[in-house]
Image 1 (spheres, rainbow, N blue to C red):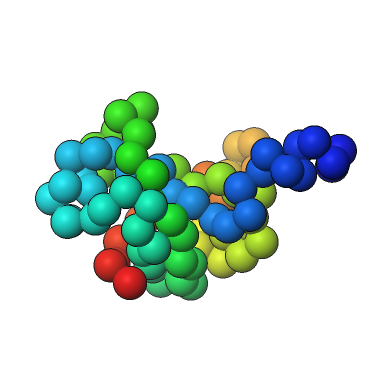
Image 2: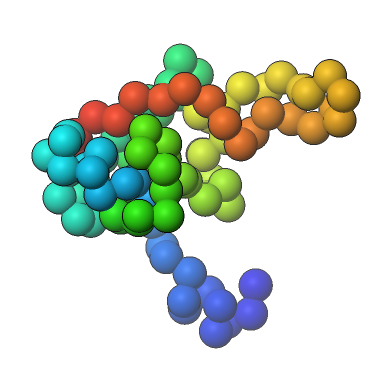
Length: 93
């Protein structure tokens, strides 16, 4: 990655969450929260984003450790791994 992009890239993992969901869970902006699935756990900074649908989260898949959350199964038609969706629970850290 070019040096300029490394400087712009967030150093720690973040999660985008709908502002209404964050308010309901009493999560503050940039608060460190835990994302937990049956397969693993990740801690990330919360960023509010109205572009994320209520009840959903967005985590960039480029951080080390994110794929511990997802299933290792493959789509039967495309043979693509199911790395882009799974059920998760959000917990205040």
